[in-house]
Length: 237
Length: 237
Image (tube, rainbow over all chains, first blue to last red; front, top):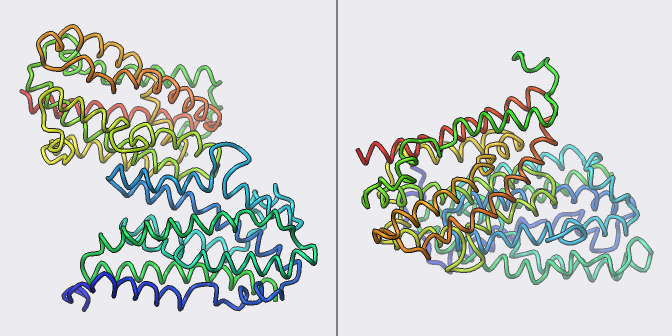
């Protein structure tokens, strides 16, 4: 028994506040590489390296969402969650978040087929992204859903990113405005997805031990996003 | 190395014929309980027991299909396969294969909420269905897809079942004709799904060893369906 096993569950609002605090203090918007990106300080090579490596993370999203689907016995939950797989895969070729990311890759001057192959992804980026899939596979449904709560912070980072790229990188010709479509589409979707996940987590994490497990899952997810930027920053040094 | 590792791959048509032979000789349409069902020999209690226990198998289908989704790196594959999850879950409450099965349960005189709870499912039925999910989780993508090739035999068993139930069980008031909707919907869907899976398996199983692994997966799946009927028949004895 860990100390949390015998403590009373936190009230829902206190639990949500803890999730918010633990998440926001570790979210990758505070990472030095992200701060440099949003301050307009990245070179064209650094911007390309980030786009190419982050694509591998994007490819893991529908895989981890399919694993979350497989953990639920509830058709209503699956009907809601399955939309996330479609958001990234689209309903036909030339649609969906993965396709939009490849358009972004092309716009920053990368060969989209080379990016799609993932053959230049940094090993440490690959390990971090694979660790996210492993986390979702190995933990319970409520923990796996809790790990997705980084989405709660995504609309803000996306809005900041769109403004920063428009200000710093579009004028320098590193990218064109139309290619920021993926970031734009994530603002409403992440808002909706985070609310849905938060409702689920607060309803299901009904003991202190479960609440703590959910916080751990969110913290571990934040570390994964952070490690991805560590690896990209290190390779750019 | 098993003997198959050094043998040449079978030509596609020979491989398909082996899959067909190994599958058809073990498919559960030959099971004594299924033969009794289609000959009109089941009592009302036996028919209900089959409907209630088979529901647990139905609940595992979207779970194993989500696991198959999670094993693929290819958005095009996932876009095609994800339709199977929707076939069972529907897009809203009161739609989809699981809902249709509960309508069938109600039509044969069962409490659909009790059936939904799965609390009277026979232990051996549960083990067999869980073994199917484990098989899909533990094996490679091509083997998991090969295990779904029992769908190739489903249209025939469904057509025979619809005719048999209309002849034997509708007139005795065990069930009404409208409640056979699930069986009817499976005829075109299983035809389409089996063709899609067969195309994938023949394209991907490019060595004798992979072809043999696919045949093993199909044989193991047939044994699972057979074990389900063994358990229902035993409980009915």
